[in-house]
Image (cartoon, rainbow, N blue to C red; front, side, top):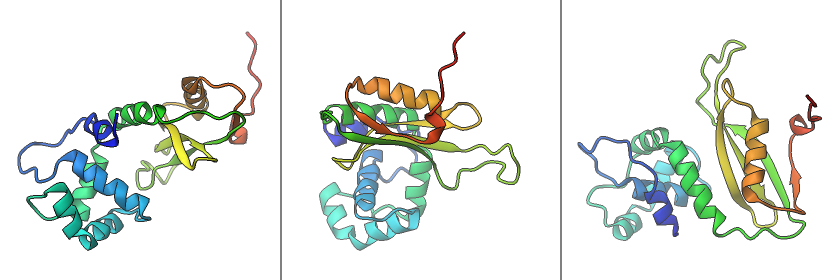
Length: 182
């Protein structure tokens, strides 16, 4: 499966009315911007605008490149579970685990999505990922909502999905717990 085939598996929840850009095209352009070091909506929009001619030729765009407003709307409304499943399937075909490779596992809150930021019942979404240190790539990822689930079972699930032995994983101290006997 190619990257484009993987992205095309992501469900497009946008209304077809007034749609100017295909979801796969916008996602590919965003990936190119992020790989070039542009991370915010405005920065991604600026990158696309600076390379508009190349993007219009490559993607055969009928309109201008997407603005930062379009990029924000698209990225906020992506069906993340669909995207994550497709990503894990795509990444899984390229990953050959090496004996004694080091893999870093961590969860990071996704910026600008905290609900109830002013009290102790904060709710936010985190992306938990396994990162191959030697290869410099994410091997698998999963999202969690901190008010509904814990990072601990999510990390176990990600490791089990890799089905590996003799691998080194670095994880937060949170995961250094004794398994309780019943």
